Image 1: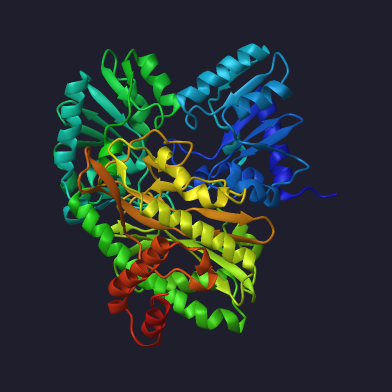
Image 2: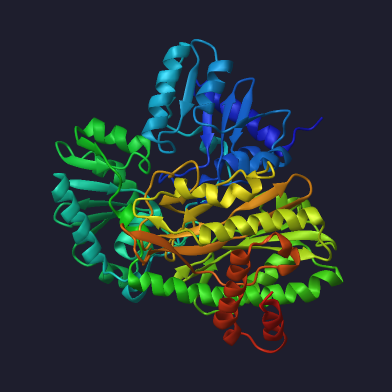
Length: 595
């Protein structure tokens, strides 16, 4: 029997591991900047296994292999990765080291690429290997790169200036803020390694990662505000050089390891969540004094200034009009038949592209019909593409990268007549969405404390969803932005602060049947509560597009929930209505009429 493509790649990797003296090798989805979404050259896990999700890892041994994914990808990983060659393992904390402990043997050499893992991972691997009588070894050359003959080149796309009218603050002032922070901390400099942090800090944007406007780069900021930017020199235009000014010295991206070696005796901040293990190792080797602290741009970037907030409102209104035009089109065309996941996603993109401020989508549109809607991070392909059929649900999670803001919105639509179970689950998701949207909470509240509000109605029926309820969103930057989250895990202890933008996206997914999600973006704001004895906060809704009333069991809604729904649709009509014409506007008026 001929080997499949992925079987052949697995065999080739094992041959290369043998040449490099490795008995096991860890393969993450990551790049040298700990990015969630990575450029084509860094899609090593997908190339090796066929898994197309945005989070996961694999461990390859000479005779065994395993792939580790979380609850978002339980179904998807089994559809895309051959179970004859890989064990499917839940990616809980410590899952990789536990699997190795159960499967590895004393004397083995376990390899990993230190440019693709955190320092904490490297330490955990070293401890686990020692307990097993094995050795954890950072490799000099990634064995996948050694066998990937047509590995994509790194993007040559040029940098672009992000105008201060959208950024709201000059790059010089941002660097001055970082310098002041360094002096307060008694540190000489800070390594900024996250791509969106570099872009935000210097008010530049790039096109090196699909749907995320960043460039492969690092920055080293000193306590006087002077900064070294490490980026491929061919990416710099005269306009970008002028924008950066004399305070920013440009060095080749390839010089970054050399520059770390020049920091002997310096007190340097490196972020343990965002700087890879190799950075710490090079600083250690240079004799630098490392302070493990959060990159100071992370929180500053998350708390939007007034220009960024106004830009978001404008982008959301524009995006809501594009989505509403699509929803009207879908209501007419889907019942006719002949549409599928790919065709409707393409039509939605066309509606967005009518705006001259659209630069890109903010992620690959999740266009899930019927059973594919149950794959909460589904990515449609020619092979998986399903037709839109009557008496089914269609889930579309999409967004745009506009010069003035990043959008992310999900709507679930009934095609034909939904079942009573579908209505019940949709209404419970809507109730959770409303509860979170209406929440009023004291200063210091974290997303982890609010997460239960969105799940309570589903929990009452003994069901749930396997993803967080909300994530941060950037300003013409990453669609997933920390440090805040509304979740019972990962960022749950980060206090919400006025100016932060989060998603509100509870859902429900029935395997092999349908998926439901309702997602709006919200802005954390101060809230004036009469008689309050402490500072209070709440959410301002930013996303405006109709919610499918055909899926709502009105009898399940309280009077307050019904009031919220009618008020929300009135705002949709006020904000989106003036941007529509003809049949689309008539449809919106009918769709947003009070219940």
